[in-house]
Structures are given as structure tokens and as C-alpha cells.
Image 1 (cartoon, rainbow, N blue to C red):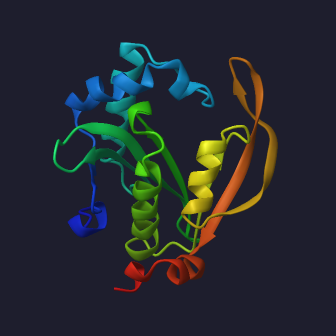
Image 2: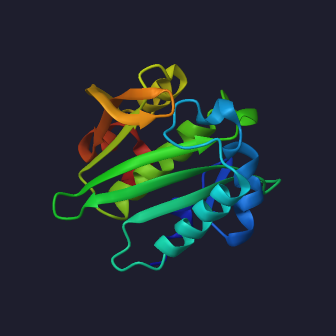
Length: 190
């Protein structure tokens, strides 16, 4: 499935499919404790990261394809600085889920918000989804801010739904509906 290029770029960012050689740049952030502190995975070993990239590439070949993981690159230097994902969980009910991770050197610079907004647009415009959700650790204030900034509404908290090395973790759940997104982003109307 070919996704139109204009749906994968912003003023500062370009999103593209992962390539096998991306593992080194993915590992540069996925191996850091600070990046993984709220995740049920990591910090990654080299083999963990290589396996992740192999799995992402294998998922591009599945029919029907439901997982769309993109490398996030800064336009200009073409450096891979993170990844963003749209999972289509339910085609009939038109539900998807957003996830993202960004290299800490780019935290606080609007990268996650910009990439997430673009992937939500992709979900609604290209895949005709009705609802897109995301979860984050309630203690991850930065991620909560990203989700709110892009127009998602906090629906509540799932209690102890993820097992981390440190014990059970709650997950705050956020969502945005297609009509809400249309009202927020005029670019969606074009």
C-alpha cells in the first residue's frame, strides 16, 4: 500500500517506512534508560533493536496491513530521530491507535506533536478511521501534554494494565474523533 507523500511530511519533518539499516539510529535512543522509563520494553540491547526493526519491516508485508510504523526524520539533515506508529485495531469500527518515541535530544521541540498530528491526519484522511486513541503512563507529563496539544481528550485511566520491570503500571487513555480533528485542523479540509 502506497501512502501519498504529502501525508507523510510536515514543514520540519519527513516520515518514511523503516529500513533495515535504521537499527543503529533507533538504537541510539531505544538503548537509553530515560527513553524507556515509562515503557514495558527496554532499554534495548543491540539484538532487541535489530529484532524490532525486522518485525516492523515484516509487518509491512502482512495482508491486510494494520501496523504502520514510520521513522521520523528532520528535513535538511535526514537524521532519524524517532518513530511513530498507527495501528488499525478494528477496520469495521474504524478504530486506530497512535504511539511514538523521540530521541531525547529532540524532546520539548514539538517533534512528537508535529509527527502525531500528521499521523492522525493520515488515519482520518487516508484510512477513513473514526476514532484514534493513545495511551501513556499517567506520570509521563510530557507525553500527556503532547496528546492534549494535538487535540486528544483524556478518557480515563486503565488501572495496572501493563507489567513493567518495576511492577504494574496504569495507563491514561486519550482519544480524538474524526469530527473533532476536522474542527481543529484546517489543513485536514484540503
